[in-house]
Image 1 (spheres, each protein chain N blue to C red):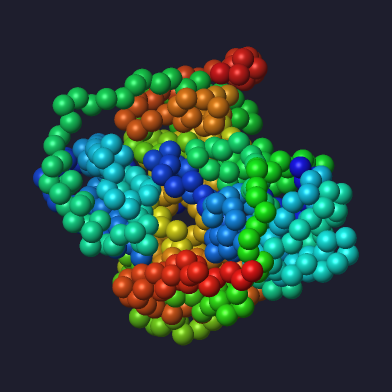
Image 2: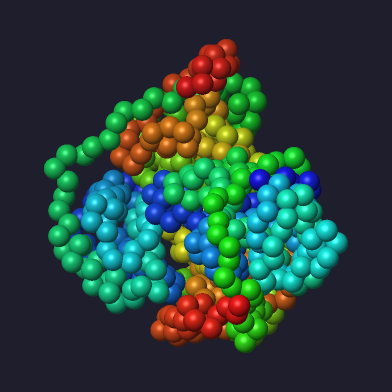
Length: 310
Length: 246
């Protein structure tokens, strides 16, 4: 077991989410940076979607009650094990009684603590993911608190040692997000659409797993049609009254009624999960075909036999 | 986020069953099946018939469905399939669509306390609509509503149609936190908040029932097609039901 000595700013149990329950109003949730979670689990020989701890901006302190292996992936939270630095993207053995300490991020928003065998919590609708807003899933439906005790599943000694550095750059989070055209993109004035693609937007503090609020050139509606509430796609860039866009993210509302100017492509969603408040981003439009090509290339890198080194 | 947005009015108009839905590529991993407005029971039934058909007999690679008033968003795994494959499979399903033999759905009664701080916007809304609190409560609780769909957050049922006399504009500045069980009106829709979230609907009452519980089967108290009525209860009864853990 693992004792939470300090929970950090917002640390939750996450896996790859629960798809399939949109008809109940339940969104998928899941790791904000799914690539980091998947690589961490691959390093440990876990199932790719085994549950791990997702830390946000400031990580926690964990006392291990077992001998095991961990892999820290995602952003660099200056992690130490009994004061010794622990490299990200590397398998690290941990002995019973050792203290793993994460600090503030030195790069992006989220860091994953993957453990051999995965974090063991009861599954809700087939997933270990926490849905913070509705208080469902994960560890008692909430972020971790001091004193929580986490159990881990049965693991096996990992055969891998680290992520092949050749691949690391290709998974680095992007600040230029690729998007496809939104269904209501023609509701906005030409100048507004140009501004959306040609000027930078800043991520605001009012951003979380549900969505990221941006600040930049205001986007004006040209058409004031009445939107009938409809399903919202993950990564949709919605424009509410006021004209400041927001990106719909993993813990999204399943339906909504704001016009959508663009939609972040699947391959770039993990990058959204690494955005911090005050990060400055840009948008670049691509076709649906290009979006799929990018995703398939990303998958082929993840599936490469050279992804991990011994 | 969390300021759920919906249209201000649910229109009542003749059905448009014959119309063929549009298939729109909302993102690189979704297709939106749009039956078009206005919102009608017939269109809503078409959405749910298609959703039910896709749940009974899934299209390869489709991983999730987001039903709404007049549309169904279909999410697929774009590593396994493509827009074209999903659209072709959808076209076949849509051609097969037939009107339902019977309209299903249960009758569900929801106890609601409309008193005091249970309905923080009740008095202002009554004034705005030029009526009394008693009359507003009477109209809200004597109307039978249909569940159009569940969306927004787990177990949130969109109910229509609220009589024009008590239709409510959204709050100019949404609340940062609406308590679980709060009953609100927005336009000609009404709903019960299943969990504490930010929200801009005008709150007129509160139910002690849990709208969504993972340890219950089914988890959501309401399902599409159910008929819902609200029964006014006293604060004492509210507390009694809450303690009974219904």
